[in-house]
Length: 149
Image (cartoon, rainbow, N blue to C red; front, side, top):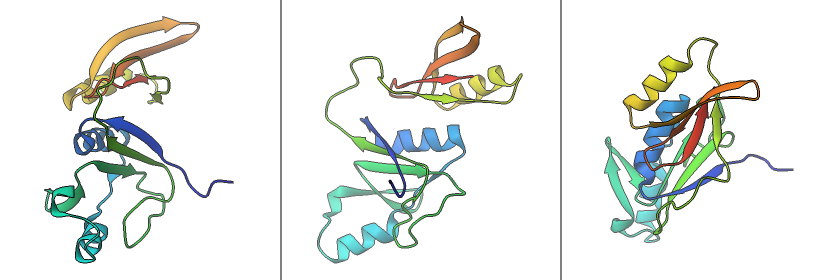
């Protein structure tokens, strides 16, 4: 049995997508400053592998968000529960996602949530009313599809 899980999402700009999804889900961006500092001090991480973001050190090619109520490792701030990890890959997204998230909102608030999400980088792809479901298909800033129901 798994102790915890993370969903890994390939992308071009992990830091940007982590910020987007932290806002979208009410998650927190993990602060890897202590972990990075230790890796730098031991010589295991070169300076070009990290950047400064909002006064903290972040991996250039990895960023993660976690649910604020779930436990985290105290030395690395890595979530030990519901977690999304964004990793940089060289190739761009090419086809429709085989896996996507559905964001469920309070009844009557879907349109307001869609507006909120477009305010920080999402785009509306289409409205769907099919098989008893009414939802909005959207894309995050890198084109990854998700639904708001």
